[in-house]
Image 1 (spheres, chains in turn red, brown):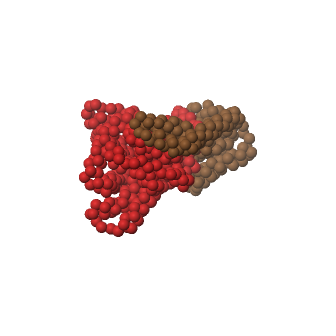
Image 2 (cartoon, each protein chain N blue to C red):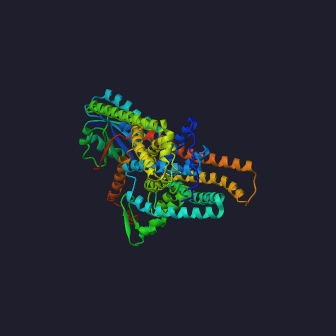
Image 3 (cartoon, helix red, strand yellow):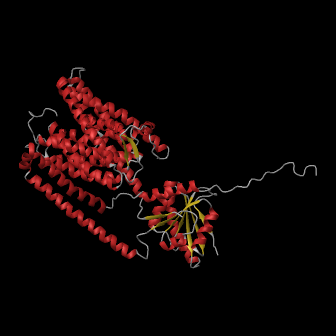
Length: 354
Length: 256
């Protein structure tokens, strides 16, 4: 865990604007999380910091809201038959190991290159992972939509599923059987990324889809189980260090618990590949936002030289682009739901085949 | 026995797959219209609305059925689905079978009431019964049941909402003291964790009931997916019809 023993806890004064801001960001973040399984929380930490909340309290409070939101979202999607509990728990176990390794790497970089170096490492990881994975997911989603909306198992996943390497595990809801050894890297990478950029699902969900051969719907739903387990562990850790501002957590939860349920409902209105579309859009725009922040860190490390004003402007653009990513995701989700709802009212129907 | 009149929305003969929608006494309810249009859109099938004049009423039945079928076709038109209308008289089962043979490529029959479904039991294509909440037989009691369910949901929304508001009020009125106690660390960590879990239960229930009260619920796509699946299975299972091949000997009778 980062060395926070010497940091004084500062809890900000809240006014109505900050309350409304946190509620709205919590709602939109919850909506996106409920739909794609992750991704709503990454805006909250910088969002809280923009209100003057110290970094560690922002991270701690964010994590403390993430696990109950994931619990509610997972429960809702479990009722729709979308969660593979076994898959979520198996991946969560290796994710916890990944989190610890991720934290150790962060601490080592912080010791060697200081806060600017640590921020640069985080941002480069953001950009690299999100651009590569986001582009791949988007291309796949567009290909799926052009071919009539039927998701197909990737050739890699088919190959891995065919390898009989004990212990083999059958995942009923995900409808697949695969060796435990192939689930370990997916879970581990999820945990490592969560410790690095606070969003493990951007590796976890694509990992489940393309490596393990799980559908987008079940992958995004099962990811909520992983998010709950990791979030609970992390929150207990932060709370034991006294870093949780309960007021911020309650305000964000008030918005996100409503949003996550709406996002979960939204998954039942749209075709499965829409989850990939929304996820990849958000990933690519967030990668862009992080790209704007990189020059600032390079300047702090002395690699390049740019003016303070430029750094401030780039920082502002970075933050706004991140908010835009979330807004775009929410707009696409709500628009898809609206379009599907207009034609899709099915009260009760009984099918009898003769 | 059969009285046939057809109105096509678009010109020209069509050889596409069709969903035959059988009206309840010539009428097509909102539920049936929604279901058929959605199903036709997903499967890219045409719609054929069939009104069967069992009581041989004649003109009044035709007018009534035409008006109701017109609504179905207008809705289908909005989604680019081809829709046509038919009126027949006589026995429902015979009328439906005749229609299937006449217009060809009917893949699914959609009917509304259970009365219709009994007479269509022996039809050769899959039959879907849409149980309407507003049908005349059970309509009254169904409507009353749904009103009371709505009242329960609204009650739960208000109840959980009040509890959630009380929770927040308690936290924020004494926010300074609570924040300090909750951030003491060590075993005090149980306080924020327990608070957050309790609030999530209450506020989560409020949010759940709120969306339900607003009419925003999960779409039960299972029924449509089941129908699609059965159509695909039916197609796979359909045996190839025996075909007769005629070989014409071009040299027949040459030289005779």
